Amino acid sequence: MAALVLSILAHLILFFWLWLLPTGSLIAPPQESPFVATLKEEPVKQIKLTRSAKKAVPQVDNASSEIGTPAGAAAEQGNGLAEQDGVAFRLPESALLYYDAYVDGQQVQTGEIKWIADDSGYALSITIPYAFVGPFVFESKGKIDAYGLAPSIYWAQRGKNPPRFSRFERNAQGGPVMFFSEKMDFSPPIPPGTQDRFSLIFQFASLLNGDGKIDEAGTIRSIPVASFDMIEPWQFKSYGELVSDDVPSMGVTTLRHYELLDRPSNKFKRRVDLWLVRDLDWLPGRIRTTEANGRVFELVFKQKAPLSPASE
Image 1 (cartoon, one colour):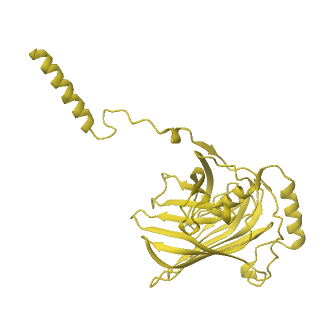
Image 2 (image 1 turned 90 degrees about the horizontal axis):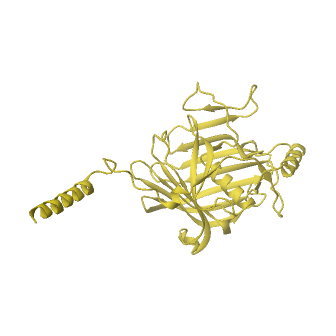
Image 3 (image 1 turned 60 degrees about the horizontal axis):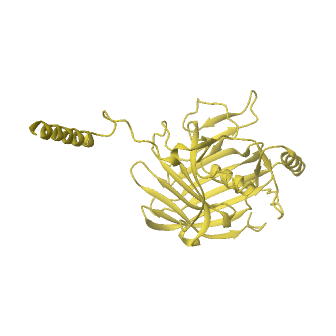
């Protein structure tokens, strides 16, 4: 009997000893969840540009707002893209969108996204007022190529800090190369389909406008993204099409949630979540960025207004 009692006690001690061990020490790691285990990577692919039934946006003469090529070239380029094979791709209509801006859950002021696009190019500007610090301003401009949005310049300025930029030199002799404000002596080649940090949101929207059935739950879409000193692949996990109230101002609506997966080179450990809404032409209904220090910046959709030719 004594031997039996000792055996039971030994097994109990062993059980609790293993239970209290830190994860990863002498114990095999837990199995991944079925959702993670079935992830499917979706690489960059060529597109087939389709046109909206509504009229295209007129070209802008203003040099600071110029987004397209000359009319003849634009038409020629647009026709060429429409005839090629590839994944369906349709640009969201030009619009002015207003967002409630939050910092750590506290509402600050109204942010604004101005999106202007036609079959030959686009211009995107984002302004987020920030009291005492000054506005955060981001701009991206470029054309449309065989892979979708093709930025030519991306720059950002936070408050009174000096602006930073990434320049895409696509007509460079020897092939397209990048130039960075943070690393002036580094000029790497541009991988096909490369986006900047904000054009990638509208690349997502254009792909979903082309085919709302893509990126089912568990898909990882990989996109090369240029920052101010490098190009690296960003991988976004899709949660598929959801009917949700994650965008409070719109109530229960159909949306897509994408989450940026962590990456080894992410020195700032920044997390990004995007909620794209079908009723907004798949434009963002909510954008949330979580910094390494835990600070959370959020834009939540408030109102959408069409852009008239005069305002463009």
